[in-house]
Length: 504
RNA sequence: GACCCAUUAGCUCAGUCGGUAGAGCACUUGACUUUUAAUCAAGGAGUCCGGCGUUCGAAUCGCCGAUGGGUCACCA
Image 1 (cartoon, chains in turn blue, cyan):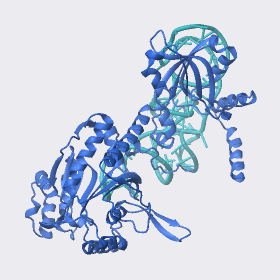
Image 2 (cartoon, chains in turn yellow, orange; image 1 turned 90 degrees about the vertical axis):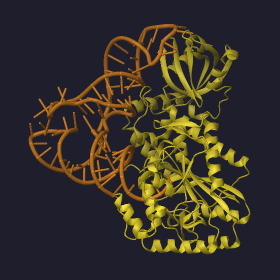
Image 3 (cartoon, helix red, strand yellow; image 1 turned 90 degrees about the horizontal axis):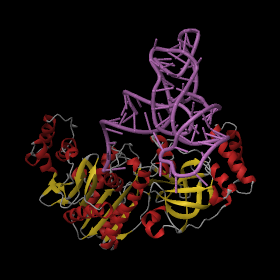
Image 4 (cartoon, helix red, strand yellow; image 1 turned 45 degrees about the vertical axis):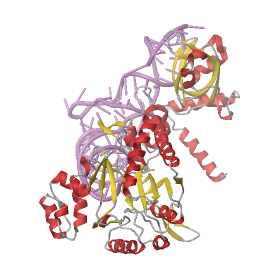
């Protein structure tokens, strides 16, 4: 324990206590009184409960009249002289307690009256139903388990200020039940995903977060420093290159669910750290991965929500397989009338796009133009789950070329509600081609594209050892959770989203 | 990074034309033994986000800054 910092924080506390608002002073005085009477709640180390609130609701018929012990946070209080009602909240929900001076004795009842909303109490009592029909606990004994020194937000309007909700998620969770529901669902979604993959012979692995080269995606990395090695390192921007090394090593089905870090803009769809699932299956191609993707996601939805048709932001989304599959060229044709397969040269491609009102870099290639046309004219219209297949090679440095058209790759991304949810390909396993594509990325980097990939010599080395034909997939889990919980902001599905510290 | 909006009691919010800072919940005191947004009576509670300026006078007008939200850009 660090005495210096302890003393300092102690001094800070004394100083701030002089400035405490009345409401905070009252609670501290209550605590001091409890402590001086030998009832310091913070000295209590454990409390044995017999039931949760949920169990009492679920099994009321058998439990009526039975004695139970439960614990929770006081959420509301109605004192009516010699009898009181309160609601306490545990992990599963809220239950009413009925507290009478006759049952508790005067001394205990008087202390109960001084307890505040926010305090945590243990209640021993019997299960009953009130005159108005609410399942409740008639308290025989009440133990203060924790004193709350700050008032909770108002019971009726809750906590709305988004700044406070994200910074003090613990308060948000206490007063906004849907927050807890969302994060329980998040946990269940990831659990269902693991179950799905484990059942199909996938092995879950963990690969490094600290990277020497940040590869596997086009993104700006976070840089950190290892002191002993005196080495700048990157926080990973993808798990891809390590997972493929494992396929080289002989793990034929692997996946990793883990945190990814990208040093880029923030928005309702982007947090600097987010969670991805990447999986790799040897001897599979991107068609196999499409089958797996639509089956996995619709299965997760059914497991977790009990249905595969969901409502997201007012739109009904049908996740049931099969999903629409269309090539990027056909999708562009469908939405713009432009047939890029008939366009031969880069220049012709640029002119075609400009005719549609797009501003195109004078060096843009046919493939880059195709990708821009798709992103600008098609993407946001893909509301129902759609696989977009066959991406241009320029934007797909890790995917296998299509045999019948070397300008394209065996790659797909899938879109729901106009958002990209995942990315997959028949993985490039030609080490010579891979090295050339890294070189091209390095050239782009030299020209100032900070998101271009870095050369990863060891990954090329692994491919030289030999990787079987492999299909791979990456999905942004946070967005999947948004979809399945109907959350409009990624911050609503991340417990502690990245926040700028407040000044001072 | 750019633009727009917000910031007033612990929380949710009013605040007129620039003229003494308001409500509900929460809190304190009292009444009340089946209430449930309990009720009734009384009371306390403010760095009006911060700074500078305009003005006799600023929560209110102007400028600068902070944080958040939204849109765009970048991305998943």
